[in-house]
Length: 263
Length: 312
Image (tube, rainbow over the protein chains, first blue to last red):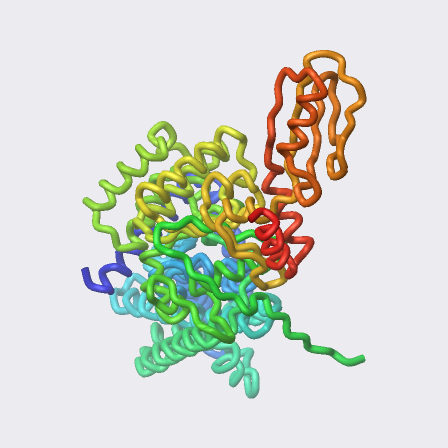
């Protein structure tokens, strides 16, 4: 079997055990899903009321807000397939990385796929169907999927860089959490509120613009070159994340416990 | 206020070789460098100086390649999926180690028989007893047929029966399948039953490297003599170097300092003077020898030499 085939097999193996474990926790997972959907519903109701009062601000309408929320949720669900990307600093600092280092597979890939939050895929399906109902046009649906995948890559790369800083900064969890929260917060606001320096920030340090502004431009205004721009940025972030991680491995000090079970 | 930087060498001036198929115990007090040593041997850490070869490979440089040939079991941590049956972990490990389906099935069958796992192979790990879980842990570690098995406190928390079973299986693996075992443990019983060789570490240095039998011989200062008297015995007239350590009715336990007194002479003298029903001569527990080595640190080697001269 080729190396790619072996890695695909490993991915499917982890998908299988994570799916089985999800079934063990199905009630609590469904409650969490319901809570998340309720949270989204409250957010959408707020913006629906807002746009009833001000139907068109800087050419933004409710449908655009709904779209960025749907793209973000589908993207986050896809990131959940590599759920350990959220826990990279803890895995490094608590010595859990050792489990992956003593295995014959690439340690970074292995740790990223070891934990999956698959219930989020159900939430993604709900958002995807909602978008189809909102805009039942094939090109829009395809662009929605493409932009969701690219947004997932950007979030993943961003988290991977922040997490891998855990090798160098012993308390990277805190900084990472703050920056991640900023990314999500900026991603859920219409972009007309960001001007000047703030606009630069959301396309560089906290790349929320790629997750909110760009998908709307691509899906509704068909500005296709943004697809390549976002894709390039997503790849760039992930490549940098991998480099930071591999450089960080050289500084790895290990924890005082030799941990076997992955988290 | 000034921040000072201090470099602590976890392991230093360490040099040893383990022949294939041997069972080696790495022992030492907490912080002695046992875990660091295992991490170096697995390729998790790279030495700042010196070189390591495991199965002819530099473990840090060829970590992934080496991983196919080594395995590890750590008593306080689990590699099993807690909410799933052990079989799921075995199947996943098959993918991690690129074992083809036919081979994996054959291997699992062997391990299920060897560790007697059939009755709980399909039960979630959370419902297993600690002994059952540990058998599954060791079976999981052997799924890819490793040549070297690292064990860190594999019997911690196990009851006597489970402990005995785990050690018996490990000994069979070592003696019959020639799997090299490197064990760290604080339990001298495990060490004695499983290992032939021992390395005692303290503060990152090798304090003693020896065959366990040799270590016993060289570090004996004392013998324990237990005597059961047939009737009432008068106050024992003990020669210098002999002391009573326990007295319970007709049974008296004596400790003989071999540097001062010969154990056989003590026995002859007591038998000549008293009516004795039973008499046994025991070695002191390995634990006390190890404790002595820990406490004496570097001079341990010299002391062993001196004792060897006394014996010989």
